[in-house]
Image 1 (tube, rainbow, N blue to C red):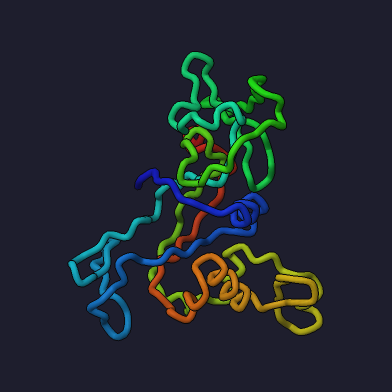
Image 2: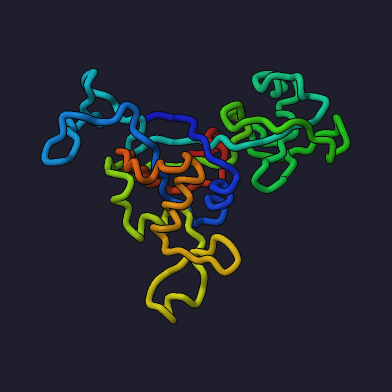
Length: 229
């Protein structure tokens, strides 16, 4: 078991907060080789075969993943690196605005939320990338319950829904199927929606490439990782 950061975009954070998203898929790098009946060889210890030898899978059951998301802090702190946004003297961090929802409060080690008076609360600064979010500012922790290796296009409808699909009401009664709205008058099946979403994130043609991915299933805790007991 390990504690690791994991990056999510604002829309996927919204799905995590709403309780719709309990799976994520990440491309295996490098891709497997030495296939056995069309499947990657696995040594049974969380690793798979590559041209360079055995490669350890980044995720394992029991891991705790702390979510890093896009964020801002006060404009007056735009030149301050993330590592310096925690104040050991005051026992809290600078005010954080989470891009996913605009909630401009900080998370402290004690789990309390605090809005600083350094600036007007509306004076938030530059957009900061998810990879630079400090651990103390993370508000979501994922407990890994399952890890699979599969081809991207092997995703089932159930798994596509678990990737965060927001199902439109009424379709199951009319057509017997579930549908996801992506634009006015445009609806897709959950798997077709995930195809569309994957290409939106990874670039046109990335779905057709059908890479090997690691499919991670998790429980979502709305807590900072250091608050989880």
